[in-house]
Figure 1 (cartoon, rainbow, N blue to C red):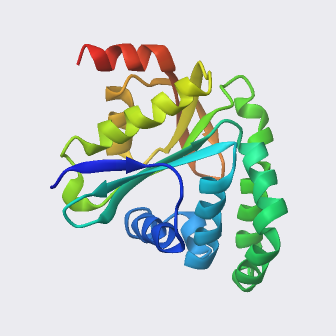
Figure 2: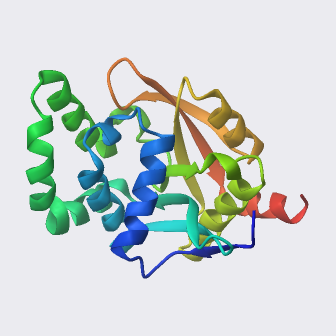
Length: 213
């Protein structure tokens, strides 16, 4: 692994597609991935452009390739509204052919309803949304560096706490959240029949722990 630099703005179409490819390879079984790479391109482009979210990528200076990313928002509902006004009509063109079953339609409705879910209204609004590394960089310490970069972004925005939802089957991800100081605060369902554990992080506490690590 060469020297790693972080990037959080001025993304090209090629950059976004690299990030989407990482997401698709590492998190390819989720509902969002099932909508296809064209939709994901729009989702991540919106994430990079919206003032309500951040998208931080890690670039290996030896290969000049993006090797991982992390993204989050200060408000999922506002991020969805940004997407609706800037990307919705393009997305519909790609999404409609995928909505050929009641199950797919239900999942779209559940995803759009998520920000107002009554089972997590007492939780912080800011939220991590996606986090992935190429396999050869896993276990290198890069995951922690990306995580801390995202927490510092929240600190700059004045955020005190944020949450992150992890599917119940992702044991390694749960352990990472706990290692980084996450407190398991709730169990929710975004999609029916799939439990997600919600971890809450104290921004100042995480950054203080980093200094003493």
